[in-house]
Amino acid sequence: MELTEEITEISVAQSNGEAKEIATTSKNLVVRTPHEIVAELDKYIIGQSNAKRSVAIALRNRWRRQQVPEALREEIMPNNIILIGPTGVGKTEIARRLARLAGAPFLKVEATKYTEVGYVGRDVESMIRDLTELAITMVKSEQMDAIEPKAKVNAEERILDILVPPVPQQSHQPPPPMMFPGVPVSSTITGMPQQMQRTPTEAKEQAQLNENTRNRFREKIRAGEMDEKEIEIDILQAPPMASMQIMGPLGGPGMDEIGQNIQDILGGMMPKKNKRRRVTIGEAREIFESEEASKLIDMDNVVRDAIERVESAGIIFLDEIDKVAGGSKRDGGGGPDVSREGVQRDLLPIVEGSNVSTRYGIVRTDHILFIASGAFHVTKPSDLIPELQGRFPIRVELDSLTQEDFVKILTVPENALLKQYTALLATEGVEVEFTEDAIAAIARIAFEVNEAIENIGARRLHTILTTLLEQVLFDVPDIVKDKNLQVTAEFVNERLEKVVRNRDLSQYIL
Image 1 (cartoon, one colour):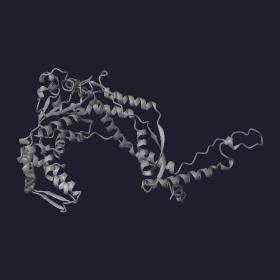
Image 2 (cartoon, rainbow, N blue to C red; image 1 turned 180 degrees about the vertical axis):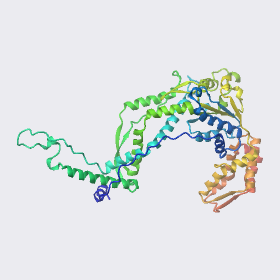
Image 3 (tube, rainbow, N blue to C red; image 1 turned 135 degrees about the horizontal axis):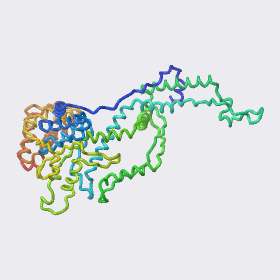
Image 4 (tube, rainbow, N blue to C red; image 1 turned 45 degrees about the horizontal axis):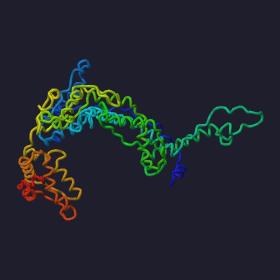
């Protein structure tokens, strides 16, 4: 049935009243005690209790500093942490889980992606700009949630204006005086033919009927009964802009942001156009809600709140710090160290505390917490420049994983590998059961291969399980019709023993 026909068939109903505005407040930052933080990390990371305790204390200290009187608050500097341990023992996983627990702007970056200022590549100040962008997104998302009820009401009214246009208001001004006695005023002067002008009673009845019809449609929209019906809407479309990136020694830091700034300037100069599209009411509601939410958000407050969060609670996890340790002078070379000591020299003022210019304003880095990590296989922490070493006063060494740790990694975490493979095969209707002796055999083989070839920690379990179940994953569901599969120690030894015994095979396969 067409919308116009449905409008005429709707009976007059009582108005549901004005929609109530729901007052909401912005989300509070997540606050957890150190024991709670360690308990959350224990769900996904096996062992490494010292590292968990250090990051839990550092995270809690962010909140404690906020409770200190303001006069002393500025004097309390964060104790930056450096995590030292072989690859695959949980350094990066700690960062991933910490990001979800922080409740504050959190950025994980690789130290190897930066180069010294003045050379091709990203300068280290860009990590502060990236952290600020994350904070802007975080605060904007929180405000979106707070104004969502109001945005939904406004989007609803825009859809109703298309389905049931409101009755035009009739002017109550007295008609202009007659130009000539005895000659009636022309319709071109009043703007409405005299036979179409309504009495106040008729206008009131028509407005009431229109409002009742809108209320009836409002109920249908809220119930989702009209989500599949199509309407035409106007969408504000920004002019297309080509991606732009400027890199190179053009002088000064922040070259990676100039391209974005130029795009913003050109985008503001070019007019935005309305594009008419035919969409379903369900799609129109999402589009209108997004537009209305953007109108209700005060970007000045967003920027101010975001910068304050970055400066007081921001956390940067600097991974692979060992890859920028050392330098050409130590290695016997004589070329410029644009991605090693050069990066360290540029990192020093950021970690120590400085002012970084962003597109939203100046950001102070004095109280940003830095957590660095590295395997330090080839280098050692003392290869970092002394000034940078002093800015990471807390050093935590992570332990290598034992065979017992591998057994726990396979079974205990909520995202354990065995649970993942079991869920994957369950989609094909195959139930997989790993016996205890099979799990022990997998852990033993992974540990032995790490000891014999290269210790890559828990990542070895990925290659072991992929090789173990490769044939099963390939044959299901075409060849393997059995819906129950039991993985035993014999199954594990049959698939992996030959590869493990042959050092050349294990080196390239496992």
